[in-house]
Image (cartoon, rainbow, N blue to C red; front, side, top):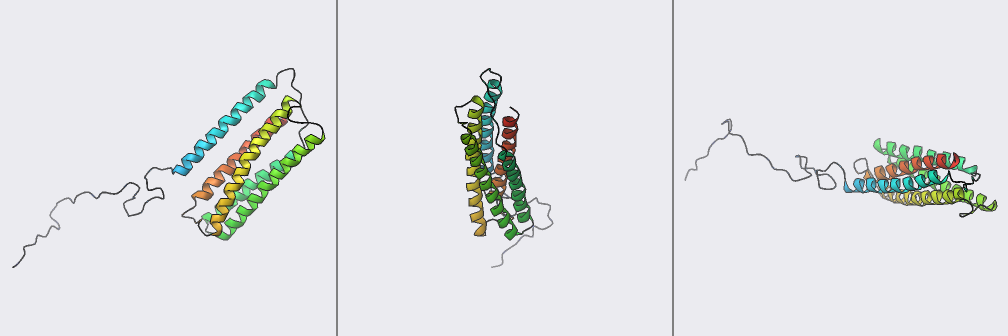
Length: 214
């Protein structure tokens, strides 16, 4: 039995709209989070963490500035090795940025090398901070010796803890890179690590100026 068919081409009938799932760009591709929100949950979490750290050190800085004016305030001599430590940390920012740039240009091997160098600089910085503490102890300057020494130990100690966490994150990113799980298309772990590291570098420069200009 013949079947009647209707040619709908060039009839002027508008085809029904094509529905896409959330996170689909219309070509069948979805973002890693499966959502159309411009920021991933990992990046949002990082910014919340950074805001928390800023509030912590802002409160301590405010207390430092207020107490610096009391009669009991006595300055301590800042160990000179902190200048070297600062240079090392700034160098680590340059190397982790080199890692990010290498990945952008698909030089994965160079990216791994720069990550390793950045982690080495971070460990060298922590070692230098420990030496600075030992120098103060050798001079008889302890946590409760003066208000200035108290802030010095607390501020450098807290920053050191956060930097150590940054080294652990960097180690995690390096481990993923060695497994070839970090690519130009899947670079979020490296991007977040670099952002956190640059933040800690900037935070240290601020703390160093605060402590030395006291």
